[in-house]
Amino acid sequence: MLRMDELIRLALLEDIGSGDATTLAVVPAEKRSRAVVFSREPFVLSGSYPFRRVFELLDPSVAIEALARDGEKVDPNVPAFSLSGPAGAILTGERTALNFLQRYCGIATLTRRMADAVEGTGCRLLDTRKTTPLWRQFEKQAVLHGGGANHRFGLSDGILIKDNHIAAAGGVGEAVRRARAGAAHTLRIEVEVENLEGLEEAVSAGADIVMLDNFDLATTRRAVAAAKGRVLLEASGGVNLDTVRSIAETGVNFVSCGALTHSARAIDLTMEFYFTGSLSHSSAP
Image (cartoon, rainbow, N blue to C red):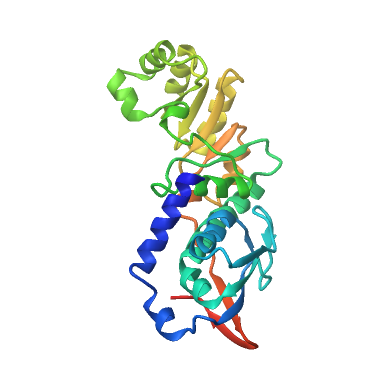
């Protein structure tokens, strides 16, 4: 988290620059405020750490009370956080803090919907490495908060042989054999295939997991039958809220979805301020 603090500081610098000109000019230094964060739609909370750290790094005197925990569903118009302290610090950090929160809540909320869709099938929902550069840690945490599971965090975490690796190696079987011979024994070997012939070649070569790339439902069922439990199977491609249940019901072990992190809609969050008895509403454009 020390490294993440450095990135949060950079995010603040990006927004504040040489100073919050509006707040410095308009808001009295002694002014204090209370604020609450909520949405007008239901969402799954994620991103509490960067949200909190924005204000802690700006002004440690800002008091933050979490009214929900990461992974919990928050109903419309129900506050997830309450803040109190110097009004200037809260106003200055508002947009950066909400940017973090709306992004990660969006990922967690979409993940929860998809995880609920596959419930009872025995299939696990996985994310991918299709994440925002440098912010992967928080985005993958959001997937966990939504009830999904993480695929590889980075390239060193496992072997995943894809089409270009296969082309460079000279075929599915040869790529798997090279991986088996050259990789640490602790790394599982997964290979992507495009047809049933590739599946059999991967199994024969000793793959641990086979990714079925853009298989239709009928072919996916045939792949499950052909594998006979000899390898774990992951379905990938064309996965969305409308299709994920039917894919999971084919009997695959995993279904992976890049949209969890690259296409989740941000949650529209609001921070509402209370200044000495008067109410001010802001969504901080």
